[in-house]
Image (cartoon, rainbow, N blue to C red):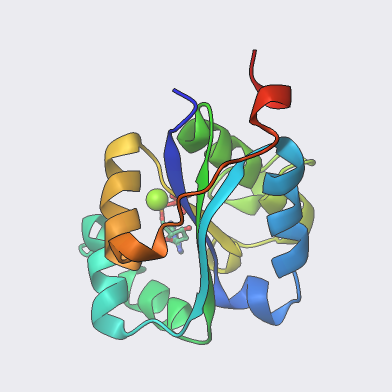
Length: 151
Ligand code: DAT
Ligand code: MG
């Protein structure tokens, strides 16, 4: 399915550390299609819903505070296997376990400052995309590269 979509976010540390361009560049160069993008200061409630599955975890309050500490770049990327490949490109949750060549493995050190988010399944991608974007913010356009990326 070359129309699979994933929600990718650059967390406040990624923005402050000037890694926005580099992270976007990886998805562009791989061949994924940018469908939506915005810089947002997320509210506490918005982040608590985003991370609803983690609300019982001991690190949850710290996670919400971290995610609220500055603007986030919210994006939707589309293409074949976008969810799984997006996760692979980010690397392991704990950057100490992330391979070199992944975003986390190359640009960060600690789990609590792991600079990026990616949906972990197609279902959570759909939920996260509609949580962060209005339908009319998902831009429908012809991706000229498509014929050179897919047979
Ligand atoms: P991922 O972001 O790889 O999907 P997750 O959904 O399990 O990982 O957790 C969401 C975020 O919460 C993660 O990116 C960083 C933070 N986090 C997870 N486990 C943590 C821990 N043990 N200590 C501190 N922060 C943690
Ligand atoms: Mg997750």
